[in-house]
Image (cartoon, rainbow, N blue to C red; front, side):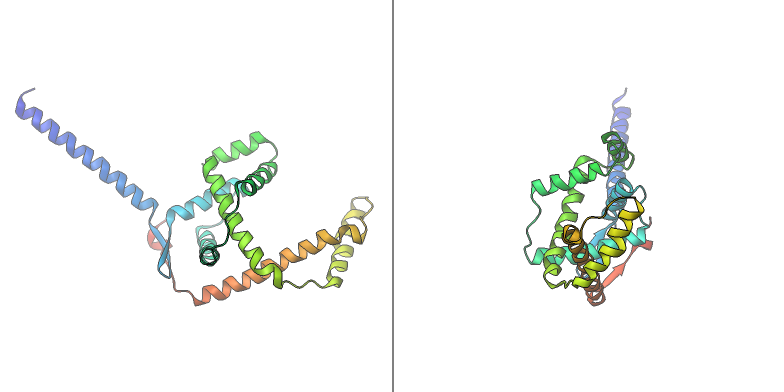
Length: 219
């Protein structure tokens, strides 16, 4: 190869390398494009896609992008307040426990692994999502559990209309009210926490400056 031709070859090769680098950077930009601005912070398309993949893994089907985006905004509200309060992050043992419960929710270890692979989830991504969910749910529990009021008559109502009715429908002897009381009370507490949290998040969203850019970002 003559020197001039060799120089041209090197120049073309360098241009191709630069072009490849630019295309990679452009691809990264698309992955991390802003889909919503919340106050002075942003939520990225990559975050939306990560939650979509996790929902596909756990539930078999993700919500719509709009629904997922609303959930991410809600999570932003909870996480921002939890971080401000310096709330304690879940321990490895707590994460391990939640991960074990998730695995048991599948029919078999093979089904768990197959669904994980199908949805494009890595072990690290699953663990990170579980840790995030634990952090948010634990904060909401600590914030609203103390203010939830349980009516004793509601416990008896749930016992008669749910516990007793289901046991009899299955041909089984229902547990006594005393035996079922603690589980029923916890159910009602969790329901109260969810209602309180939902109202608080709604009121918080009304005070926030939110710009949704999902349409502009593309799907």
